[in-house]
Image 1: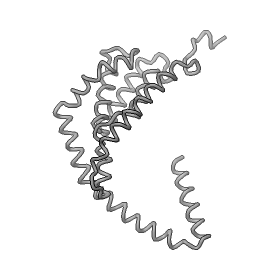
Image 2 (image 1 turned 60 degrees about the horizontal axis):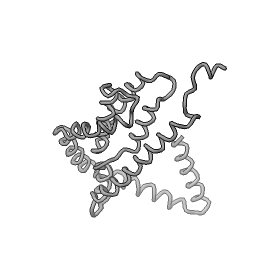
Image 3 (image 1 turned 120 degrees about the vertical axis):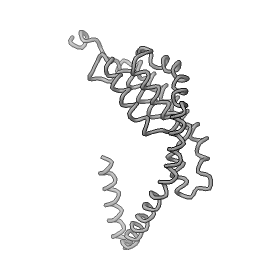
Image 4 (image 1 turned 30 degrees about the vertical axis):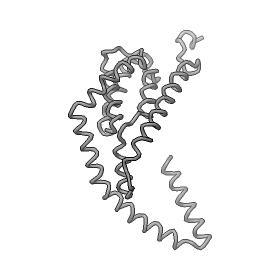
Length: 203
């Protein structure tokens, strides 16, 4: 779908430019920004390597595991239907800890494992459980302390202070996570989102 939208943008832009006699402007802009895209991509390599390396050191030093232990009491309250010692709980804790440190590459496999484990204890295999919905909402809006990728983008774009995004990011992701948790917990209570007993559905 997103490809169709982008195609429409391009086609409409080119057609409008042709009618306005600005076709050459569109061509020049396309070539100029193609060069900018290559320069930006190459510039990202060094900065991304630096930040991802720092985060990897933090992970190997045990900070992610330490944060995971700190999150466990909160997780038990957020996911009361998941047994405390179930593998799903461990995977979710580690996924969120990795997201908090901006370790997207480490968080993805942990998130997939968490979903697989949650599906194992899902009584209705064809419908996402409350725990799965809650985990997805929190994962999408995850609190992030260090946005290494955004810092890298800003540095590549010659920002005077690429790391100044850290403070606003913490505030924004904290607010989004609180909003996501409130929304998913409220929606779970609505009858329309609750699975009816099989006998009631048959009648």
